[in-house]
Image 1: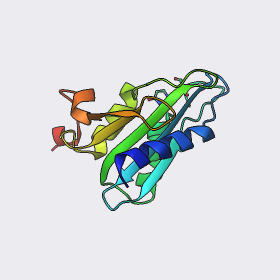
Image 2 (image 1 turned 180 degrees about the vertical axis):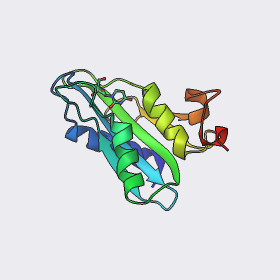
Image 3 (image 1 turned 120 degrees about the vertical axis):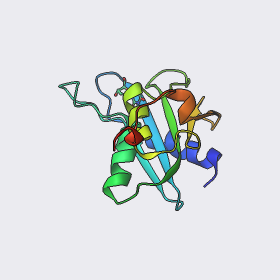
Image 4 (image 1 turned 60 degrees about the vertical axis):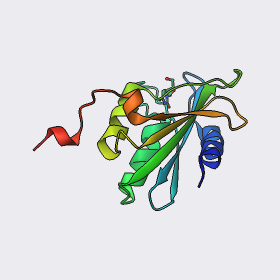
Length: 137
Ligand code: THU
């Protein structure tokens, strides 16, 4: 799966967003080293704090299916009735990525619009000087 198609999958996954409180719809598509794609969306909750971001939904789906090796994630997020615009992963999602991914090589593709345009970033660029599994003995 190439980057452009991964971004299109995130845009498609955004349609499943359950976001009645913020109306901010987010989709994600996580690529494993073996070539599988796990999609996710944000899932909100009346209690607010149980809300899960699209990125973490994809990670938790994948890890719960036995996957732990990832190469890239695409993210597409903008308001329900808004013009498509770029939104970067939140800090909590960056830390979840850090748990499973090499910060130097894992790519975060952030959709710029609903046509497939995106920018590409290493996890290290989004979460510099990070704390991760290597900090434990
Ligand atoms: N959201 C995501 O799904 N991913 C992010 O990285 C940022 C925020 C969701 C959470 C919430 O449902 C909505 O966007 C507004 O914060």
